[in-house]
Image (cartoon, rainbow, N blue to C red):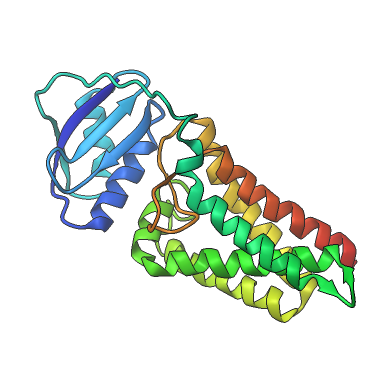
Length: 243
C-alpha cells in the first residue's frame, strides 16, 4: 500500500537524501519517493506506519515535519516489469558490452588470447567508465548512494569520495600499477559495497541504483549484486594468480 505525505522543511537534494535515508531504515517501508514538489513523499509500506513513527524517524535527519495529505491510500500493482527488463537495463548492458569488446581486443597479443589480460583490462575499463558517469553528477550520486551503502548512510562524504576510489582503481589496472595491491583493494571495496546492495535487495527496497551515477534511473536489483560480486570474484582470481 502506498501513502502520500507532505514534508515541511526540505529545501535541497541533501535534505531529500537525509530524509529518505532515515525513512528507509524503517523495515516496513519498502520504497520511498521523496521530492521537493508536493506531495513531498510517496511511501510504499508492507504494513501501515503511524505518522508519529515517521516523524520520529525524519526528526533524526533534521528539523522536518511530516503530515498526511488527507488523500486515500494509493494501491499500486507492479506489472510488466519482466517485459521491460531489457529496456530498463539497456544502458548498463551497453556499457558492459563495450567494455568487454575493448578488453577482448586488447587481450590479443602475438596472435594469442590472454584471459588474465582480459580481466585486467575489463576491470580497468569498468572502474574508469563507471566513475565517469558518477562524476557527471557527483552530488546526485552521493545522494543516491547514501540511501543504501552501509558507510555512506553514516558518513555522507564517503559518497563524494567513492568515485575517486573507482577512478584510481581503474587507472591502476590500466597502468598495471602494483597488481596485487590493486586487486586486494578491489575485493575489499566491492565486497563491502555489495553488503549494502544485498541488504537493500533482500529487504525489497525499491530504490535507485547508483552504479551509473544519477544519469540513469536504474532500479536496485539482483543485477546490481551480480555486478559487484563479479568484480569481487575477478579480483580474487587475479590475487590467486599473483601469489
